[in-house]
Image 1 (cartoon, rainbow over the protein chains, first blue to last red):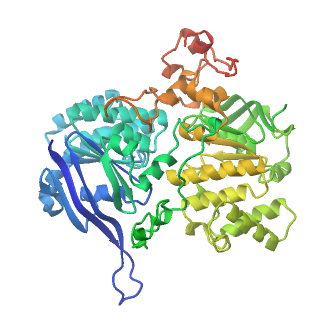
Image 2: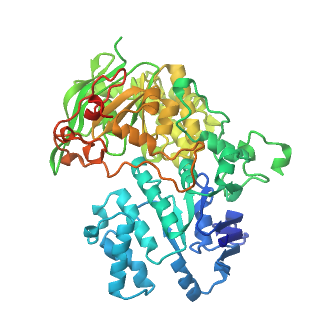
Image 3: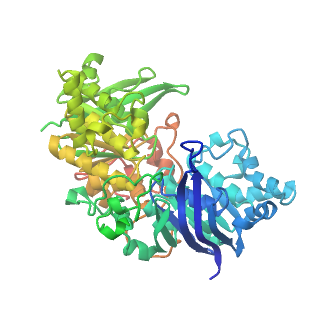
Length: 304
Length: 328
């Protein structure tokens, strides 16, 4: 199989305010030595708790956040080295769906214009063919053509997420980055959107970089999974291997902490492996393993 | 045996620009000492309005309790004076909200905020109240509580803030504790800690807990009994095991089968989840029939004409014509 996206040793750091004029510039290391690859037609899930660097990793991989090091090979081209014009061409192949369907659509624009806008900006086809494409996409994502001229506030959360998906598909992308696309939706609506994403993946051969904190959702939709903790990938592998036989103690804890229908209070269920405390602050990461302070298997070697 | 808290035929209406809208329609629920009642449903189903009605926190106007009773130890709260409600709120019953940042006051230290709740309900002076606040912070598992008590809310993480909210809520050993989506804003490992803490508190104080959530996994781990709500009505109520293993109402069946399972499953990556088509109807558009009819696969002509009422289906009351007629 061919690799669509290969990320090698990606790093992102953000400058922090200097404590004094003469002090050295301090940095927050948000993403450290992250490597993964995504094959055509597959979905890679990135899971982790808030602040673990999931979104920053994905944004740096598609150059929406400046990376401080590493390589991102998209069909063999290093995106981080492309000049602006070439990157602009590449943007057609990479689109994005955001978490919040309320703030990611312009409230003053009609949805037909919202969905058409990427084609206007990238000057694809003429006006008539763009409008025809919008109609086609509306049907594809399960919206009615008579809704084309409405405004975003006239749609429910699930429908708005469908509009976001239609907008992302206008340029025939190869890769969709989905940043928590169902977290803001009710479970019944969440199932509708997950089914739509699964259908589009099968029909259009799309690849997903799928960011989520919901392990059930990731297990449902993704072929491969990477688990992040404090800016690093601590474990990655094919979905079934990772979910059925997690190796890293953090992955194990994450899986056992997620509530599922099989743990019943009525049957005296008590959660195994409890994780105490919060993740450490990325401003002041511990030496050695970042998970050491919360790890049940911690040994002296972990802290070096 | 009568229950600790009993909601009977509660009807709450709101005046809106669409006229008077019924937010809760003949809602009946009970919860006993030491028991956890889970209330589930999508947003807009009336879960939070139920909780706020019990606490007497419905803004009136535009809200109005149009009928029914809420009895705490036999005392009808819908008839209680505001002064009496103030004494009960935070004392006999307390509530934990979803977003711990917006429910704490940013300009007071967390210790002072807990102490304030204690001084309102118990006859103690400020320094005693502060000492109790520190003990409570310790109780809810906050490390170095005397230092943390002097912190402001923004200095704490989301999980710690929710612990502070719990410390405040349990400061007077409430008989009824209402938790409205207490972990929605938190990460799963922290959510697990908060659930464990709520369970410990229940064992220690014997409180009744009403847990409002949209997460069936949380229901499974926390609840003894479950009420499923839809469009302002309770449509199914039973022991948690019965609802999770043998859901009756088509909506409850849908809610359970549309969850992406964490456990092992067969099939490839592209198999489909069960879907409930459509969305919850807006309350002002509810007709004479069953509110779920438009989204229901077992819809029959009767469903569009007549509202189903809860009927005893074994020990498992359900409000559905199709179940009642044996069509499902």
